[in-house]
Image (cartoon, rainbow over all chains, first blue to last red; front, side, top):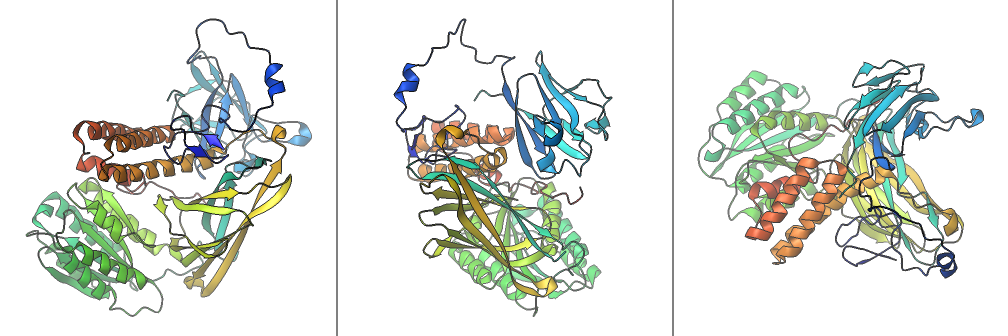
Length: 173
Length: 425
């Protein structure tokens, strides 16, 4: 059982939005559970030392952005701290990109194994083509390889012929 | 490739932690046509337009509607049937059901329509049902498209009864409301059936596109009488089934036998994706992979002379010890669920408001706003926020706000957002 923090309704484990009030039960990390806790873990837990004021919106902290595969409307959520590799997983060569486009038709769309880098620094998002075979396009225009190009919410990034839309949303609710 | 329907499943969580309590999983079921692109001949269409010509339609609205009707005539093929009924205080058949051959004559008849008088819908619906049943089609699609901008008084129950009679004979109804005066409760009740839906046309300029899209969609129908049956493993339960693509619609499910549910999903076009969200309660299970549900889709493909086709899909869940399971929710499933939750919240809000629980109603609208903001519909989130505040202050929402919320949360304002599946790649 999960207890909704907003309205205290009891919900089944695995519920994403409270069936009573509609509040999200997953945004605050793992949901509260009525399951009995392992007390030993808590007692041996070292408290984390926090200094300074609580950071509500630390620009450097990891945050979630979404890449929407336009053709299938599949959504890829990316926890972006500084940079993420976009490409196609190739376990035999040990290439495991942070954003693996193979399940979204990456091979047929001509996505390279190491295709591009999506980065976040100093409050700005950039995409950089890594000399991919079929190129990277931002809003229809091909970007030069090895040259970080600024992107913003709503921009369309095309890897080969796979069209992705970048969604950046304020995490504050 | 043999023509058929391709099914794809996505679970909210692929691995569940072992525990002694039941758990909820969400299953996104997406379906699209495969192997039908050029092979199947179009099914003949038998279309009846029912147009409100009350005095409030005068000017821009009627002009757009007449333009839209004339364009429909151009869209129809030689095998399609067309009829046109108008109503105000009385109803008239302007064009009796006939093949769309003498296009110039049909358009001349459309051009003659003038606005005057009141709104009495039931007469118009009765004549429409009569006209649409005239052609004898061995196979094809019969549909009534109703457009109104006002309230009909005293004959609401007759309107619903006539709509139901048609639907029971396989004649779907698309009810389009224009402006802010029409009765959305009535149109939603009339269309609460498969192959039927109500849609809100906020501006007259959208009429042409909405009409054209609808005819295109009807022409694209390739599968008929699509039924889904869901069989659950012992202890499991199907809690709900809703359509989420191309628009949100609750679906009636019937528990036909123990742990076996069936739903009628109507006729499907071969363009775009049909998406459904299932809420499934999974009982406590031991570590291992377990089948949870068997989904069977049954349908006819009249264009290919194939009846009683079936596709099956087994939904499996994997259970692992709790310490090995990271809590991760699939983003695509969450996205469609979030839209569905917003729709449910606003539906609940109207119920609360009707029962006098204004504060609760306002909270529901506000939470629906939070959900819409999170899925990226800022404009609708803003409307929800505004109307939640208005409801608290004045005890009522605005007519326009209510319509925007009711139809907006379903994705049924103006032309339906492009949901075409790209078949290239």
